Length: 275
Ligand code: 13P
Image 1: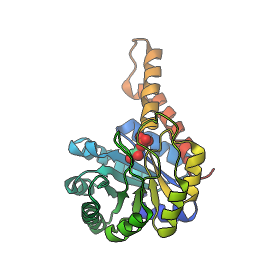
Image 2: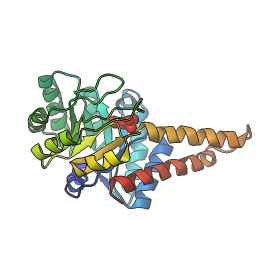
Image 3: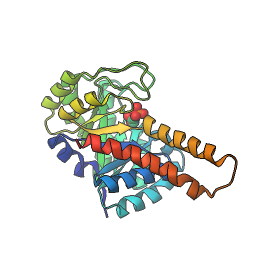
């Protein structure tokens, strides 16, 4: 039984200058890949789902399998709503058994971000779950707004979040040119918030030497979606090409795809934990 919240994972990670990987899954195979990697690397993981899956029955149905997989895993596993866009979504996730939620108010005016994130954090805590918020904005096809350290300190205190996503130069999706992370900014935020684990969104394609320095300066959770799901697509394509139109049962077809994804996650887990 090792279904946990982020509170069981992230404060210790931050103290030990390592980060826990948070991987955006979208189906059984991507979830299974994360669990396999967690078992093989004997390391905790966070399985997270994008907010849009909570607008349909996908996140509900997947929760059934995810809770079983987490409970069966010998390593701690948290199940997290990523970039929740409303309090209704937060309530849904908590009701469906997710152990952690993010209310992303990073595009709202500061006071409104605090208000909504506080409500989400209160709901999470009442349900025995953990909460993440974001201050500053990590680009999602729009403009980045780097996190102001003073605002980060005030926001963390006012919102009561267990983990704080900060904007230090990453972006969601693949980069058009190599990013340059503002490590000094990260360090300053971390100094202002010595007990709050910081979260790095936009892990895909971020140069690993810069990721390492971010971990050394307070980042304790790293989100990876695009490159992981791309591995799923590429591996599926390669397996389809091998089939050349012939039939194979779908569970057998997916096994090598899942293995490829698990190997990708295992590499990231090793790196994030400093091995
Ligand atoms: P990437 O898609 O860039 O890995 O970002 C993932 C993320 O931050 C999810 O919240």
